[in-house]
Length: 251
Ligand code: MN
Image (cartoon, rainbow, N blue to C red):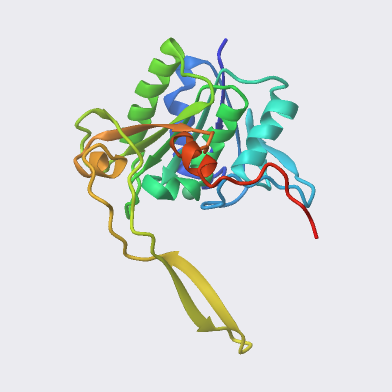
């Protein structure tokens, strides 16, 4: 039977992860291993400086006081004892599109699956005041079924984003680019010390009809293939063109 591992970054109690687990339950045996609390924007962090605790909160549902990447590793080595056949991460409350994917714990959960050689899919939906995960769950089910049937390539994974309006269908997309503006607010705490609070500022997306941003804006489910290898192959000649010396002397 296909073994499916599910994680997220919104925490084990998020309704989004329950919706995702239910959406693919017919495909195999689902095990959920997720952070005990919210760990959004934690990226691909791996916890190396403190012990991690595992708690079984329900049958085949586990909470780890760590990151999504911690969860995938503990699941594979200690709970499943082997690599699963599919890793899913989400459903995240809020898009993970464009340049923002590098911050995303949701995307990192799927990236870790891909690094372990497992077909992996990250699923996120639009940030809305009241969440209804039915549409994103249906999209996740459709894509998971296709991936189980046809497979993915090694060292890549899918980043899926679902719009809030009725879905027009699925679109294969590229990562959008934005003018990078992260806002750093400054305040004074009750003890008189200055603090900083980082938040998302208003930013502009660079227009691109193939982008994930454009797809969800038009009401399509965006499906972007992402690579774990960040090497810029097209820029290898640029680095070679720096004519760096073969040997470096130290004074
Ligand atoms: Mn999140």
